[in-house]
Image (cartoon, rainbow, N blue to C red; front, side, top):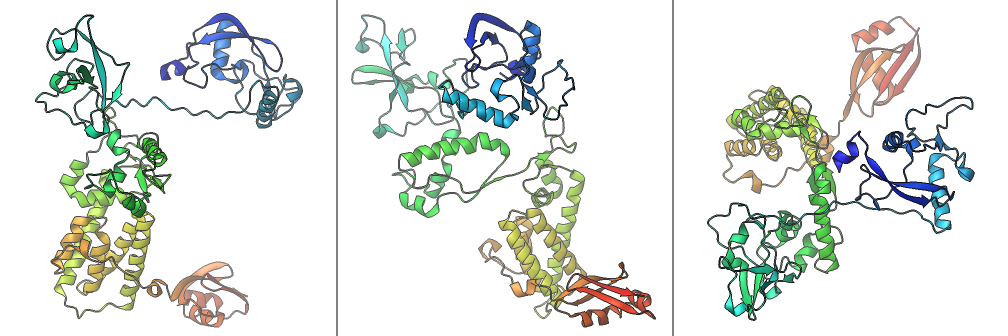
Length: 540
């Protein structure tokens, strides 16, 4: 289909028939064209050569009439338009009878309404989905619980033959499928020493004749030898996760009520037309049958961005730009790989991989480890000063909120700021700060998180320790930095209490030498003070 629609060479044949245009009663020739797909809509389209590139090429090749019915709305009365190519943009109708002058969107609605009025057509939404090929000719996968009657040559009875034997002529009636009784489920795969595909299009299970053929009520039957694809399990796995030990049902109604629907679905955009869509099919059936109380399986969808190769192109073997994560793990460790992937940018963004930048997160890991080692050398007598306390609580708040918002890159950035600050304390790193840092880094770098936790004297994994708690009051700055302008030009910067009045701001500004030099000996005509933002002194 893709080749047919993209081919520049147009082929076709006139059927000899005509259709009557429902609005003009004109005879419209009916052609068969290679680029018109039977799977698109009804398989028949009204070609408009003047305003569709492929229709135009087809009409040019076969000498068909090209009728122009749309012109650009910006066209001047005396302007000649090119007739050497199709005009595919919006505009206003021409040569369209009473629809002349209507803009494209209004013309579409008006014409559709007219067709509906005369019972010759109307608006319709169509949905397109390729056939879902559910069967696989391989061993692994759930066997399809269907079987078929087996017929033998005329005059031969089921008691006299065995279709498992070589040379036994028989016909499997695939046109008469029979479902396996529910009491006989689950249908299990046979034990096979050789489950290679083989040459039989029926798949390797066709060779398991003792499993395939069986007798029931004096008649022979043959099992379906195709197996189900991975979709058969993955389309409803989230239900089974609720109740994996249940041998009586797929999942219990109580656990469905307690846990469903899924809070968050994370997947690449390519999943939107595969697993996500198929899982909804599965879920809708289960909902209609009353197995689940929830009409939708997932509450929120997040598409993770694709990681491109270092050349900015999609990774592929043919381009030779594939980055093997095993190589990064071997060189720098799994934590470095995880940290870099999350630090590259927003989760939803498409990002090019840069191996040279992995060293940045490696340095962060090393600094963090050194900070914890410094804290280990101290006893609990090293207390946190006010600045460290504020930075710590701001970081815990930032990381906590960023994890909820899946803003992993900014969470890592905040931890880098905290680590740099603790590094500046040298051998005066408070133990409490090091422990909190080990806890908040663990979701991003679990190995170094656990190692640091152990260094700090904990026997049990930090996975069992409660998440950090921050004090909202300590996350708010009591002071603010703001620029000081003299006659509209910035001359310095001051740090003052957030609620400082104009008099206090001016007093602090006069302590800045560069500001004082610009004002000294001059008459202050006006002071413009916006608390927390700017102080502008007008002096003459």
